[in-house]
Length: 111
Length: 222
Image (cartoon, rainbow over all chains, first blue to last red; front, side):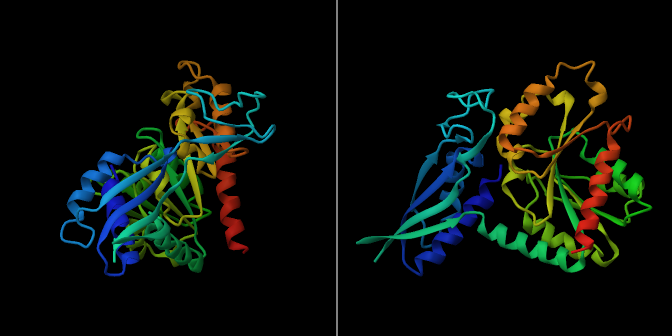
């Protein structure tokens, strides 16, 4: 539900870094845990980009799956449906290693 | 010709900047603040009522209530004895963000408060993404929601500093595997302080109240 403010924020960051040049492509990195829906951002993007230097720019999403790290044996693994236990040693001492990313990695601009 | 420019900027950085301003304003006033998050019906407002009711003689408590509509929750907080209660209506937004709290803070007399409780919109997804600038986040889970919630809403369970498990008076009537629940919590948030309690019967509320008082005192002595 909050993809509109998120889209506005993406636009603001992109235009600031473009420094007056036309933006053609945006490369976003989105972790699975950040609860963001690509299609919704695309939907808002097409509207809020209108009339700006980023109008018509393409959004590229790189999704990072959630990855847990076992603090006992060092194994990296994807969480199960209803278990966060390490598949290698069964430990429950784990930490979230990947999946919380949510940033604009780079943009492409016309020169 | 096009060129690629590295950006690497967090998309919610504007929110984070404003959250830092909120934090600075609270720090300057010496006010300790909590962000209450939970699904609808878990007992956010009930916990505020119980907390305010029990501590009103010891602490001056201000409450900022976020809801999509109505001022019912702020009214309940005021009735329970909150020294100030401010309602934010998000107008449909699924969460509070730092901007909304930034606009609400001037309506609170911070000099006249020891503790600020911010009640977020009932939702286990979106509020986890938006920092407000409060000092600690508290998640209020409840027994009837089911024991699988840490597995289904990992971001929320991962990002809080305290966990309240409300409605423990319903444990005899609802299938809830406390071990399974705690295993999920422990994996996402090792060692997070947890308060099993019942806002309805008052069971277990004492350790929670002591923790709140302790946190306020820590802030005062800084």
